[in-house]
Image 1 (cartoon, rainbow, N blue to C red):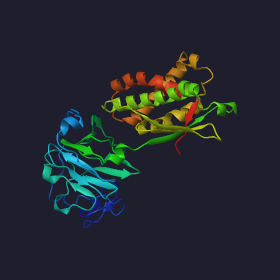
Image 2: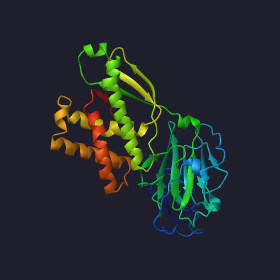
Image 3: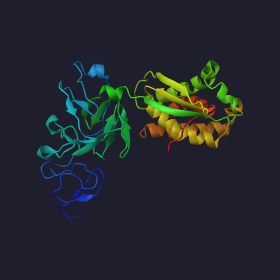
Image 4: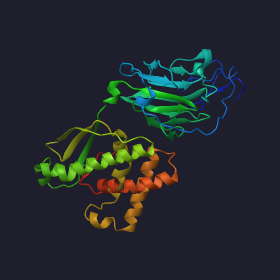
Length: 334
């Protein structure tokens, strides 16, 4: 690599000195490296989460679909960002390329913000944030983000870029996004279709499944330092030709994703539905459930420490057992 080459912080490919954006992935490049010194490491960050109602005591902006607003530190006026599927946050000086948000004027260098620090993306109604191997890290509420992993954003989330505190405001369309998934009855008897949506079936099978998913969501939120949110059922309908349910919730998308990713394959590999009462007395099954819970939690928060993980595994084992022994199986991930 010659002294004139610039390495993209997002994809790590080399670009020429004249490039403002990476020719491979489109990320803004640190072309101001000669003008701004390398980001200093500024030490441990003490996180004190604050709800958006505590942080912001002024009216929130009305935002169109595909836009979001960031409140920087204690600034009263937000930065509104729109028209980009991905926006890069960092210090770009007077050479800020397209699809970037220059935070230099907010004392970003002193607060430990890297030249290309993080990326906020928007796709299919979902906002996500990703740390781009920054020097001082990116935090979402109480969670230190792992490099290269995207985390879903919610309205009022608090973000730390180094020591720079941001709060994000999302449009109503994103806040009201429905979570829709299918659940199939694993029994093959045709008689199942006759009582598929009876009151008894809703109470004994569907309600238990949804309660377990909502509990998984609550535990995953706890792993990230967030308070549990109420999850409401928007609709449940059956398929006349097949033992299939279409379920729509107003929240809980991350929990549904984690259940589909981790629980469904485990459920298929461990058919314990025929003897659920005895299963929890089997030390091997309990150990398997603990491993399943650990994997799911580390997917939800890769930076979870061992003590917190052990406590949450204990809470998570019960809803995972309900899901694993349910007559309903969520559709697997493609």
